[in-house]
Amino acid sequence: MLGRHYPPVTFLLTGFTWLVLSSILGLAILIGLVRGTPLPSWIRLVHVHAALVGGIAQMILGGFLAFIPPLLMTGQKQRDSHPVLFLAINAGAIGMLVGFWLRQYLVVGAAGFLVIGAFLWIARDAWTQARKSLNSPPLNLWYYAAALLALFGGLACGETMALGFTQQSYGYVRLAHIHLNLLGFVTLAIIGTMHNLLPTVLNTPLFSPKLARTVLILMPLGMAVLIGGFLNSSVPIEMAAGGMLLVGATLYAVNLFRTWMASTHKGNAASDHLLLGTFFLLFTIILGILVAANSLSNPPFMPYGTLHLVAYTHMALVGFVVNTIMGALSHLIPITLAVSRVTSHKKRGLYLEQLTTIMDRWRTVQIGGLSLGTMGLALLASLTWNLPLSSPYIQIATWSCFGLLLGSLTFFCAKLAHVLGTRPTD
Image 1 (tube, rainbow, N blue to C red):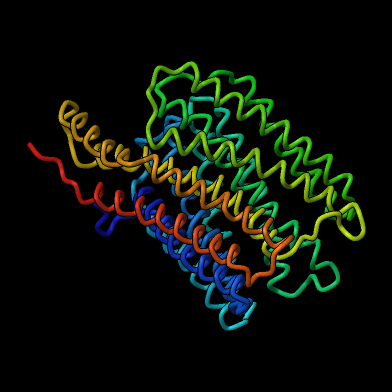
Image 2 (image 1 turned 180 degrees about the horizontal axis):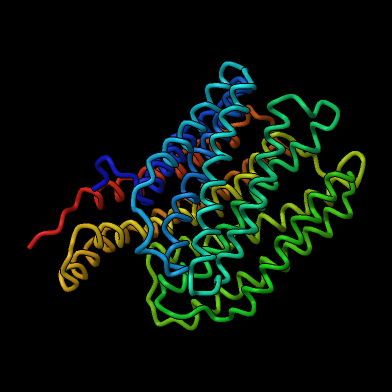
């Protein structure tokens, strides 16, 4: 199907491959941490940037390529293959990993400019399409615009760190870099897409476009206040920002839940993953507020170490982001294959039903493994408040999380491979 062409689905599948490989590396880091034999710090940087740049950012780039032309009704005027973008985002990811491995941060900075260039191109192309389109920019596009602005801010912070311009304020710039990329870019891009994707999966209109517009105001505003709190080292400002984000995320979750309630769709792997990812977004924001409140006392009311940070961040990265990605792929890959492989509308429907059935098999096991593995990280971190790392309970919790998360990813990859290998028959 892909050949020498680089359609949006190529970005989605390549990005997911990056994400799976980085997840395996992350599980190895977790085991080393719990066993008291931590891996070198550069491996953690490789894990994080492989997941975020090669994986999540590449998949969002592919999503922009797929979703923006239909939103602006310019799809037939756009080319299907994007080899330069594909090479730029993957060369940028590889360059960053090599730079971290060699501890050559100038290489990291140079690779970052490739990533910046790829997203500058998509921003310019979207702007050009919007000016030529007879359709007024839909709400989703404003989410994408806010996400791209946050991304460029986050990448600028990353470049200043890589090029050594932030020795005096490294901690603040690092926090801004992380939250602009994760909370600003990734979260806003996902929320903007979900307002269209979940109603499409459920075959029903969005419950309230007005709520979606309110969320568009609250989430970027809360993010801006949060960055201001970091820069001023003000925990009360950070908590106020967390409250704004919580209100925005709650309205977003209510909108999606009411959409699901109004639908007659029986549900499938795609809708289950997407709705569960929404729950983890809310849960992560609540945890973030509690983490900030915990730091108000000196010493903190509850000890907060590396494992607690791992559990907190992976509620967002695995619980929210990976769940959403798996839900999106469960819906998009079968549709993309059906459209590209079958010309007859009647036969296409039968083929699509066959592919969707494959993706829905044993979905309870797949979704349960991912969710329990993610929540298990929180249990593992909480056990360290009362037990040493050598405790058998902590070892059991660690290997249970490892098995659940790896098993769920392996199961999903097997189904994805099965779908890709299933050809239409007469």
